[in-house]
Image (cartoon, rainbow, N blue to C red; front, top):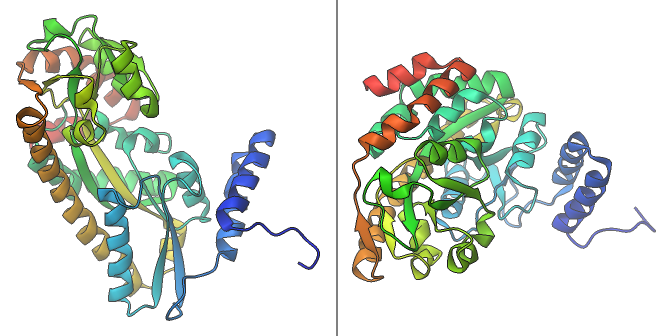
Amino acid sequence: MDGCYQPTSIVEAIMTIKESVARHKSRLGLGLAIGILLALAPASHGIAAEKTLRFAHMWPPTSGWGRAAQEFADLVAKKTGGKIEIKLFPQGQLGNERENEESLQLGNLDLTFGGPGVLTNFDPKIGIFDMPFMFHGYDHANAVMDGSIGKKIFESLRKNAGIRVLASGAQGFRNVLTKGKSIGSMADIKGVKIRTPEADTYIRTFRLIGANPVPVAWGDTYMAVQSGVVDGMEGTPDVMRNFKMFEVGKNVAITGHILATLQLLVSEKVYQEMSADIQKVLSDAAVEAWHKQRDAAQVGNEDALAELEKKMGVKISKPDLKPFQKAVSPLWNEWAKKAGATDLVDAIQKM
């Protein structure tokens, strides 16, 4: 290595490689390059671990799910007596969600977490968690994720994509915030411009209920509502509070149209290289950390909604959801046929 340029940090090196790969339009090259750098990345100081696993994700370390990732890492270290170290790379340090999941497939990254919106690119069945009005509440959603239906969905992802789900949790039900009129019925949302993520399920959902969905990058959402580019946005109460959306929109309709979920993922290739006892540690630690955070997320959303109403001056409306549910039913049918998952939809609704 004498006489060669050496990046000042692993992150800088990865960014350099990403720029090079982008010029050559090669995702595979990015995955391989990240794998090489991860192999070279130094382990943290302290007691030397027998094995270090790299865990990259998109969330800030101070967020609830960022803290859950840290708790998972701490639990693994504790349960293995320090033999296994989980090294965290938060806030997109090693790439975006899809890039991390592609690296997971190649076995160049050990762990990450992500939602159904991106994971559907690897296996369509997991998209059921993004279907509008699929779940009746948190208990129903948790029963699906933890039970035989969730196991079947996650097993499909493992077989088809080489990605294993260690744990799954609900971030919260999404509602509609508007700047102008309150949404008291489905008729009130007709033609209203609602900011949505750039995801087909969300866009189709709002078109079917008569709104005008406008995909906007999350970082531009506050300004888009404030300036009138859109009339409102949709998201969990916790997001509306924490990102101060109540400053630009004073009406929230409790629609609960989509439940946002987050899956903790491990490379199946990496997982199979582990001994049975280490596999169990990873699974147990994931469930413990993720279930704790999903419970906290539910309470956090309930508290946020109360705070929005009592302290932030937000008017809460509760429209009849039956017309909304009827309007989006074609999306269920379209998705189920495309994904070959009609049986899953039926099974969930019978629970």
